[in-house]
Length: 362
Image (cartoon, rainbow, N blue to C red; front, side, top):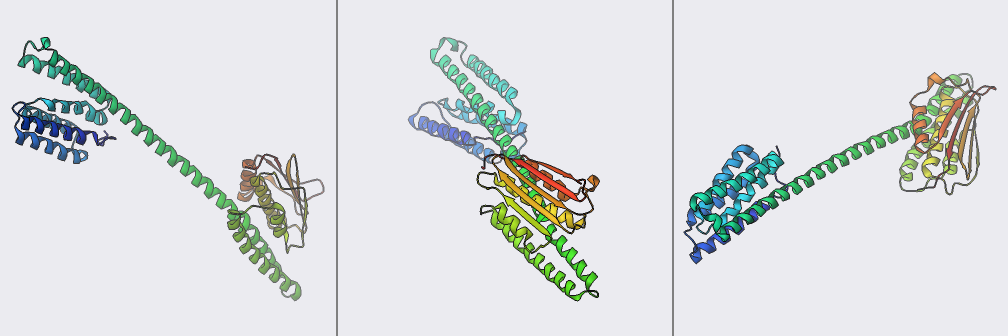
């Protein structure tokens, strides 16, 4: 049960209006008003509203009806009967529409019965009949207002839940993107460093010069790893150039040859970044798994789309050996609207082909 009301200002406003009208009637001598129970009852209602969340809904409803009755009986002018429109209004948020409508009908029945007891011929009095009709209109408006407020609150809660779900999906997508970036950037360079250090260890006694060159190359890979981290941060704010990124990727790697053709203008940056990540993964796999001695990277851009081919002279590709890196690469390319093909050509080695149809840059 929802105890808090979406429009908590309704009750205080009505209490204030009844207080002003009742005190005016008392000062003007309109009816036999008893100011002490009248004011005390309204004050008790105000206090009750402040603690409504801590009180059982059924008890809260009973207390409100009792205080409404006290205030109405102490008001000689009879203006306080308007308080009873709050019975179905507040009950709507705690018990729902059915109970609220039933209480509204009950209020009408009680008032009609009370009028009959007080004056059996009240139906012949146009003023009393008019008062009852206005009371009925007030009840209808109160129930309608409560229904609108409850629906608005429900819509806000659903919107908040949807926003939370979207935020969670966005956070998940961002975590996946960061995971792919870490794998593609640092994984590539760390693999190169490991290979070079293994080479330095193997040639330490046989060829000191080769060992020194391998260590120097490992230092270079470590520096490039740091630069890639900085570049990844910069690309969040700056434009991305595939040609520049690929050139930096193969820099200092004499066993990797780059061929680039075409213009990047008009191509989706997400597609260009996907090609760059594919090149990273292709080079890393050629060194880590294929033990290749030569790697070729060819990127071509034209009005139809973009294509990247990474080929090596290593041991070939086994489909069952696909790991997280290839999975992340496929995800990137698919998000950009492209496809990935990996296989071993007849001449040996591995050939990775990424094709992404051209679509307008956002």
